[in-house]
Image (tube, rainbow, N blue to C red; front, side):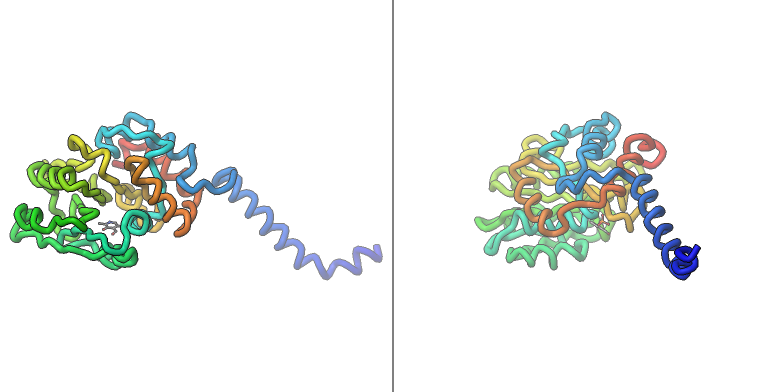
Length: 266
Ligand SMILES: Cc1ncc(COP(=O)(O)O)c(C=O)c1O
């Protein structure tokens, strides 16, 4: 009795602490058993996403990928872009970018020490000036940055334009970084074609996608990329020291959406 009386004053402190511990445990158990972070993405997620035939058709444009060596889960496409620029570009390299462009490209690519070579899309339809593009490619060109469907214009690069870009990449041994976060926002019978699906391009393209854009979950910041392992390896190293990993509960939630409800969501 004396013990209870002496310690009663601690009850208001202990009860909320127990509650916090309990609710925390519940939340963690509901969300995901936490087996420790995995830099390239939780295998359960990448396996689901990249082995499903529906996803292959819908998200990967039919381009087969090895989920274990050719995929990376990122903190949105924003972090994916940063990891690509930092992992693939070095001081002295040049990267060709179509102008106008999404605002993070220039500031992020410059962090790598590379120089930006802009090629202005031609009005009124934002077509690619093919001769200017060919003239922009030089011995220092390491990468062509392609964003189709395009922000800010909504333009979808045509097959002819993509074939010209692919031809330049192959002839000059240039990498293509393909920001395809708006791949499902295509209207009026237009068809999005991934540069990575063209002959000879799977080996030199890295392709970025975003749950933020696909599911309108921008604030979740879950994205993914696919590409050949020779290009993904340096990107994974940059990603490791940028963020190390992506919250596994969000990876799991996105995998759930992609796996079971893809027809509903897309
Ligand atoms: C063209 C383009 N790429 C990438 C991003 C970033 O995507 P995320 O929200 O997945 O980081 C955006 C966001 O607006 C964008 O417009």
